[in-house]
Length: 559
Image (cartoon, rainbow, N blue to C red):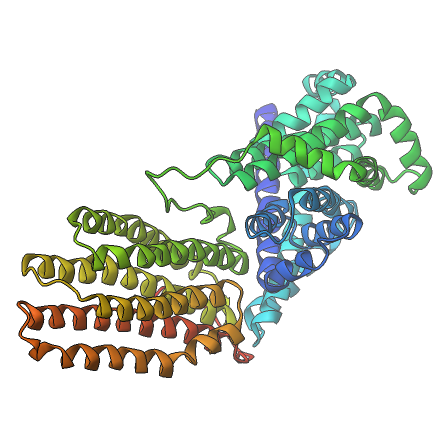
C-alpha cells in the first residue's frame, strides 16, 4: 500500500508540477507578447543590414517573448515583402537560438521559496491594476511564480527516484551521450518545448540525479527536438516559412554534431566559469555557451546557408487553381495580436493586388464584345470571396485577445478594408458584367470617343485603388492622403464623360440612347469603386492618428 501511495505521490507531483510549469510559461509569454508585440517588428526591421546586429536582435526578441516561432514568422513577413533577404534572416534565426537560453538562465536561480509571494503579488497586480500595461506586468510575475512553483513540486516529487533501481538504470544508460541526446530530442518533440526539457534537466541535475555531462547531452538533444516543432509548424506554409524552419534545423543539427564529441571539454569549461557546486547554473551556462559558440562559428556563412536552403526549397509559383489561398493566417500567432494582424495585413495586400488586377482586366471585357471575357471576369471573384471569409474569421479570433486601443483600431481598419475589397470584387464581377451583357443584348456599341474617355477614367480609378492598398500595406498616411486628394480631378472627369456622351444622344444613331445608359452605368460603377478606394485610404489616415492611452479588453470582429 505504501509503494502504491509513493507511486501516486510521485506521478501526481510530476504531472502537477509540469502542468503548473507549462501554464506559467504560457501565461508569462502571452503577457510579454501583448506588452511588447508592437515593437518586435520595428526592432528586427532596423538591423537587417548587419549580420551581427541581426543575431543580437534575434536573441533579444526571442529572449523577450520566449518564442522563436514569433521571431521566425516576423522574418517570413520581411522576406516575403522584400525587406530582408534570406541571407540576412539566417543571422536572426541564429540569434533566436541564443535568446532561447534566457529561460534556462532564469530557471537556474534557486528561488522556489519566492514562488508563492510572486504568485500572490502577480495576482494582485494583474486583477487590481487600472492600466492594461500594469495588468500584463502582473501576469508576467504570476506566470514566473507558477514556473518556479511547478519546478519546486517536480523537484520534491523526484526525491524518491534517487533510490529507485529502474530510474538509476535509466540514468546510467544516459551516460552514453547519443542516448542522452536522443532522449532530450524525443521528449522535447513530444512536449513542444525545449524550455520544459531544460527545466526538468536542471531539476534532476540540482538533485544530483544527473551528471553535468549527461545534463549537457540531454540539453543538446532538446536543441534538436525543438526543430520538430518548427518543422511541423512550417507544413503548408509559404516557402519562406519552410526555408526559415530548414535554417533552424540545419543550424541546430550541425551544432549538435560538432559538439557531441566535445561534451567533456564543454563540461570542464562551464565548471571553470560557473560557481562551484551550482550544477543548475552550470547546465544553463553550457546551454548558452553552446548556442553562442555555434552562432560565432556559422555566422560567417549566412550567405552560403541561405543559398543551400533556397536550392533545397526552390521557388514555386502559386497554382492557378487557388490564386488566393491563404498563406499568412497562421493560427500559432493568434496569441500575439500585433504579429497576427500584420500577417492579416499581408493577406489583404495579396487580396488588394488581385482585385486591382481584376479591375485592369475588366476594361477590355467591358468595352469589348466577348461574353467569354465576362465569364472569366466573374470566375475571378470566387477566390476573393474565399480569402475575405478567411481573413474575417482570422481577425475574429484575434479579437478574442485583450487589445490595446491602437490594436483595436488597426483590427477594425483591416476588417473594413477586407469588406471594401470584397465589395470592389462584386462591383467588377457582378455590376460591370451585368451592364455589359445588357449592352450586348441591346446591340448598343460604345463609340470610340466614349471608349477613350472611359479608358482614361478607368486608369485614374485603378491608380487610386492600387495606391490605397499600397498605403495600407506600407502604413503610409501621406500616400493615403494623396488618394484622398484625387477626388476633384476624378469627379470632374466623370461628369465630363456623362455630359459629352449626352450631347450625342440626339444624333438619332440606332441604339444611341441605350448605349448612353450603359456608358453612364460603367462610369457610375467605376465611381463607386473610386469612392471605396478613398474610404480605404481614409481608414489608413485615421489609424495613423494619435491613439488614446487607454486600452480595451476585447474587440469583436465587425461586419
